Each structure stands twice: as C-alpha cells, then as structure tokens.
Amino acid sequence: MERSVSEKIQKIKQKMGDSLTILAHHYQRDEIVQHADFVGDSLELARKISSLNARYIIMCGVYFMAESSAILAKEDQKVFIPVAEAGCTLADLAPGEMVEIVLQRLNQERKIIPIAYVNTSAKVKAICAKFGGSVCTSANSTTMLKWAITQGDGVLFLPDKNLGINTARSIGIDEQKVCDMSDKIFEQDYVLYLWPGLCDVHLGFRTEHIINMRKSHPKAKIIVHPECPPEIVEVSDEWGSTSKIINYIDQIDTGSEVIVGTEINLVNRLKNIHYPDKIIYPLSNSKCKYMEMIGEKQLLTLLENLEKQDPVYIDPETKKLAKLAINRMLDICAK
Ligand code: 13P
Ligand code: SF4
Image 1: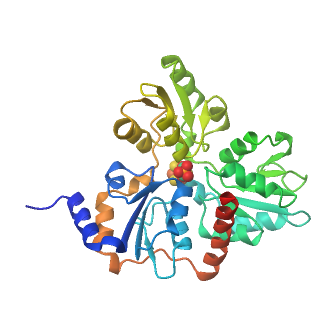
Image 2: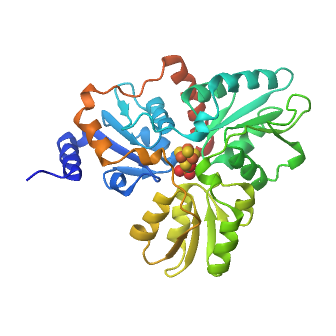
Image 3: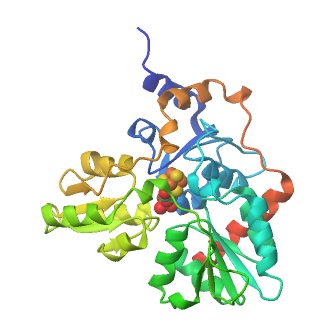
C-alpha cells in the first residue's frame, strides 16, 4: 500500500535520526507543526540554533528565519528551507541599499543607532552591526529599544512602524520626539526614527473588529501581536509575541474567553488542538501567505532531495556582521 506524505516524512525522519532537526514557526500549518522537533517564535528559534548538533537543519518558516538560522549555525551544519520564495512583506520593505543610505545621512552629525526587527534580510542585519546597532524580535523589542537609546543620540527602528510605535509607547518615549520617515527626517533632531514598513497580515485587524468582538463577547479579554496598528494594541488588554500569546492563553482559567489578534493558523491550533478547554475567538481570519507556502508536500520534496539541494547561503562578510548584530541582541537579553 502506498504510504501517505505524512508517513513518508516520518520514515525519512526516523532514518536520518539525530542528523536532522526540523524547526517550525508558530504560524506554520498543523500539517508541518506535527513533524517539527521544535516550534517557537522568532526569538526562541534563534536561541535554539546554538544547542543543535544535527548536520541538517530545516527551517519551516519564512526566508529571514532560515537566514538567521544559517547565520547562527555551526560551520559544518547546513540550513534548508522547503520553499525559498517564502518571503516576508516587512523584510521586502527594507532593501539593504536604502537602509544604508538613510543611515549614512542620519549619521552625518549625530550617532543614530539602528535596531532592525529580525524580519529583515541578512544584509540589513549586517548594516545595522556596522552602525553599532543590533536586531530585536517582538518578544524583546522593549529591552532592545531601551538599550539602543543609551548608545547614541537617537534610534532608527526598522522596518515595522507599528512595532516601533507600540514599543516606544510602552516605554514612554515622548511622541513629539518620534519621526515618521515620511516627515522631513533630516531637518530636525529626533530620538526615534521609524521606517515605514507594515505587515499586511496584521494590518488586516481593524478597530471595527475589536468593537464588534467586545459587543458579542463582553467577558472576553483581547490579546494581539505588536505588528498590529497602535489603535488596536491600545484598546486590547495585552500584547506580545506569538509565544507570549500562547503563554497568556496557557495561564488563563479553563472556560475563560479570549480574543486573539494574530495569524489564523496559530489561533486555530490554539483553539482546536492545544486549548479546547478555553474559549478562543480569532479577531479576524488574517493569514500569512508566505508561511502558507510550506506544506507537507514541499517538506517531503526537500527531504527526498536533501543532498541535491542548495543550503541557505550568505556571503562570509555579511554573515560575520549579521551574526554580530544577532549576538548583540542575544547577549543584551541574556543579562
Ligand atoms: P514572533 O516573533 O512573535 O513569532 O513573530 C514573527 C512574525 O513574523 C510575526 O508576524
Ligand atoms: Fe512577515 Fe507578516 Fe508573514 Fe510575519 S505575518 S512573516 S511579518 S508577512
């Protein structure tokens, strides 16, 4: 009898044993998550790499996550992604050349420290290292922004404007000192410059959704991801990374109601598989089309052709600098 795709994946995993590790981001589909050795948010996935000894690491997530894994992996490890075209809107909105030009201009008379959300290319991470900056994830953006502010005259936060505003508000940065990149950024001194990038998945959450959900479920708490617009975060009860959202749901009592504003694959899994004893409502059905590109078929094709596939490649100079930027974050957040 012909084996199913799932069985074929399991068979290869068994055969490869410790030489293979499959990582997956929380937004991956259930059919992928079931095969993962470790599932996490961007920070947890980055932290995990140094503890892995597998020769082959497969990142089921988007391309910047595979790049981060390749940056942090050991020399003899190879990192693969089942679909190299699985990009990220935010990463695409911050081309390296443009980031470098803006940083050069901003740094003519002042010292402006860049903090790049990990949803950026390896090249952008490398540029941030060159300018004395680092990276952050949605789980540590407050720590990293606080750190960056002490390192110079101001900070360029990129590419997610919403994460930048939400983080700045949470640490009380005076909004008069925040400059949207569409303003006259080179004419006045600001403390925080925000790159105009946005994630279309989280832009899909609107104030009407909150109003309607609050009306129909008055007892429910609302938790959202910080890539959501500030007006959504402001009227929610909590905000945080995908892992913080999971921990929040884990902690609430059985039977409690919670409305969750993040990617639908994760919300549905929490609702149907992990916490059927809690009442979970999606704020809306926003789906990440890039995460969605990876399914069991793509994973199997990669596994069956691993030796013939090109691992994720980053040129040595970019890799060295990008690693410096990521390690700065890991060190600062380990303190
Ligand atoms: P987390 O780091 O919170 O998992 O978020 C990654 C991401 O891309 C959210 O859109
Ligand atoms: Fe990028 Fe948005 Fe998808 Fe996250 S949800 S990977 S930020 S496009």
